[in-house]
Length: 532
Image (tube, rainbow, N blue to C red; front, side):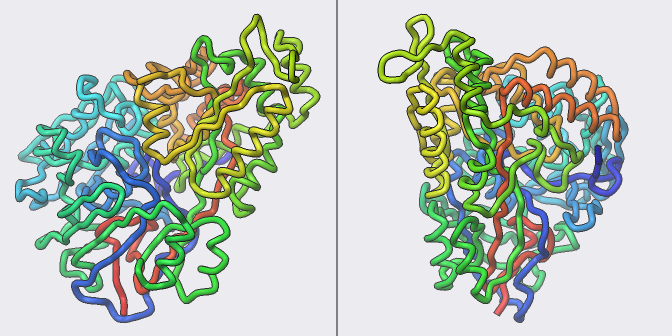
């Protein structure tokens, strides 16, 4: 069992986001020419963010845009794990509290001051159950309370019980200005933060435009609005196809795009700078809703037994990834462990058939299985990201059809998947979902594996596992190596029950044309640079 923290856990935080890729490997690119003054930085997003309020959504794309316009409490260097100031100039942590001293002179995009009160209000907004924040219990413990001392410029966040990763979680929270906290709907349409850029135009499913704020002087690495190479304008274009994004990079129509799969081959031979980003790409969830066939443990086990996960990972990543060993895969991770090995049933189609036979799912007419008159009908839900995801769905369809199931494939863009899985409109509308929960801290998984289901919570697979709940209670009361061991045990209970299984990590690369990042490995507004 290994444990790694971002520097010393007591004084560290990371700005990775739920359902958004954090990066690892490589180094900031694009530093080969002279800085461009007041240029336009064009980047690609593969899906539309939908509602923009980052406190109310788990959308990957909404949080990607949020990093342009919102600030965070602490910035962590992904290379060294060293924590540095951002909104907070000082910080400390115990097992039940975190304290921050907020910079003086920070302003919001509407000109109002961002104070310790603003930070405390943002945190309390998330924990207030009546607000319905998607980040409650994820970035901020549901029981946390924040208090502010305006004179001292300090914020204290306290929890009634130990929270071993409290600071790491809080550092992932985009801080919303007061105008967005009082008018939640307004923050769905524009940005209401203190970040380097302010949104000036939004055209759904096409592009989002941002303008640099003058007078910004509190970015990581002492970045200000006058830093050389910082763009005046940022345009985030919605480019849902990676091949199209690759073509636009090569043609000079984009400055940056995240590309994986076969398109990397031609980009790697071009004069582009790169940052490699390993990230989890394939988690398989099984719906436990009563009445769904996957509520039967035997069905879940058989579906896994009949599927060659090595081959699935190979297809899903176009041969450019690996099998997952944990759901905590976003770097830098608070803990490094393997919850998969020894806990997933071996690939064996004959054993899968025997598992169903013994559970009463018998072969009938046409080779299809049923039990007590109910057919074994499996609805696979996945995000259509290109040929590799479609080929993976076909692979699963073939394996499960051979097992005797009737398989229906449901695909769509990220907003459709989130609507089906998390809206709460019909929690029984799917049986197997390939949806990735991108976390760097294991405690962030808890609301997805326990507690209320959508629309009241995030437990979209309707999982109820007493062994997991007991392991979480144990893990939440300890820190350090003991915490990591306990969290590994908790995640293993989910995998052993075939409730959720991570199966693929993908290597994605950020490609830069006449551009780069001054620090970090994500599109943070203060980090964007343009070069001749």
